[in-house]
Amino acid sequence: MKRKILCALTLTLAFMLSGIALAQKAGVAKPSVPKGWSFSFPDGNPDTGKQLFIKMECYACHTIKLPKESLAARPGKVGPELTGYAVLPKEYLASSIIKAHTVVAAPGYTVEKGKAAMGNYNHFLTVQELIDLVAFLKHDATTPAK
Ligand code: HEC
Image (cartoon, rainbow, N blue to C red; front, side, top):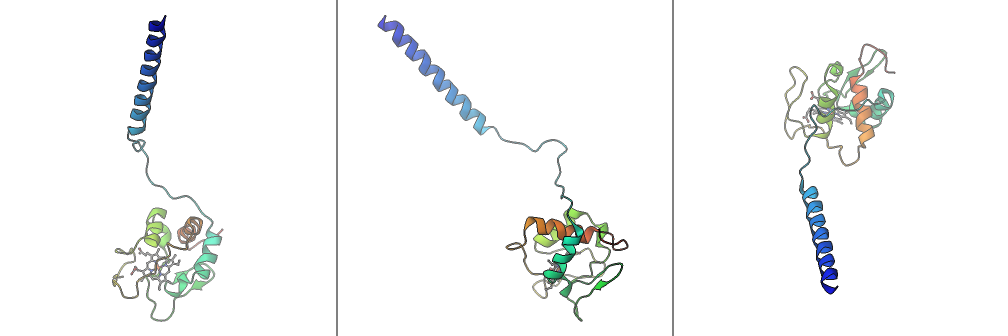
């Protein structure tokens, strides 16, 4: 009788241990990027983006021409003109706002490192604000923002 109990206990213990081992194995399994996945930026609200562009004074350094108005940079503007940037992918635009700039898409514009470079907005710009700013830059400058 005692033997039976001992045997049952050993079996239970063995099951429990193998269970733990299995669970650990599952935890170690490396995740992998699903096939066909790529980073894509969500659509935002271009109107909110325009308000942000004004509120954050992006126009102080970047001229952007809209159908009915022109948000103009100061004389001796320091950043590239952003009119026509709608042709660029959202992902490029987002990246150029959140990463330190090394490349610029505007023809003829040369990046002057350290001098007059764009500030870092990452510590206060929310993700939603980034999405809306990109939506504003993405809207075709020849059609009104909607
Ligand atoms: C103090 C001036 C300044 C302000 C303010 C500024 N920028 Fe810039 N921006 C630059 C400069 C200069 C560059 C060129 C890259 C560099 O030198 O950092 C640039 C580059 C860019 C680019 C990339 C252009 C390209 O061709 O890749 C985008 C997009 C942009 N800025 C958007 C914005 C937005 C949106 C804001 C407001 C949140 C803003 N900038 C505020 C100066 C400024």
